[in-house]
Image (cartoon, rainbow, N blue to C red; front, side):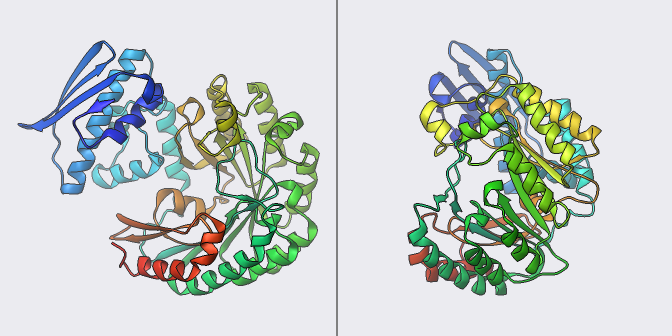
Length: 456
């Protein structure tokens, strides 16, 4: 790919919607003069030219945003014409389509014209409309709001699709004690950075992969927060037991994530999971009356047909957890599937996602948050669905970036928001566990600078 603009990375994102960037001869030139954007694009042996009027921008940031958007749209139109197909999200490559919709609503009272311009399908636009409706009463854009996040980077084993920075607890046991010592220090120092607490979220990894004593150390450090949404990602059914559930009750946890990903035993074996579908049912039975429950499923897993996915989704719906999140398989560097066979199931994934939307709507669930990632099967999305009045505040705040995130633990990312959440600054803790432990004083100091607005 060749371009004379600073938007090379953005163009690569558009190209990768259609074909790996390295496999395509793509040349691009751009100018913004005399009131018009001019794009000339050569794809292999075909040339495309686009001339668009430059819109009036309120400031330099908006001007840059419009310019980048035009470059990406021109590339998309050329590639769509060359390959003879449209993508469900059109020229949108960002991970937060709903955040873009909110920006347009603030600017012009409607996001429909922009989504039409960017070739977003009607079906995807309708999902965004439903999500914005479901977020009413939760969506609160405020620099003074905070969510508190703790990342526990240990799992009982590595799932084949997973690219998270996590450690097998059986091989990393020697680090657990020192990690918890550092985490307790970081949590204690972090509470003074919290303003209006919206939610608490302990994720990973698999937090309940810790022993009961270790797990309680984490919850004790976080403390009890009655009246506040408090989530623990229990994730794998093979790590959930009565003792850990009692600890969660003791510290006033309100919400638990149980993530089967599939109810197909053969797929669970392929993924490297050490539990069966029967375990999912048994653990859900002892959780459902004590906590609000979210269940995760993945569309596009290796070896699964659309019918396999339908059976899993129907099984989850029959259990009727408060939330069901449907992920589209996304293979990043670091996942076993990506490293071993570059597997990415395209066939039937769109059918799976369409079935999920219809079946969940029929069962009374509404989409309430959505995000996208690179390398997703079918260029689709991950969507969280909720029963009425059961939406997760943390997910809304995080996906829409309308609240600060005070984050603790190895690989945790803190976000400070300024200027009505229009400016966001981040600090990422070291992802390597020994490095995190060794640098905990520096981590604490840098995070204090972040929330004081002194890291620019």
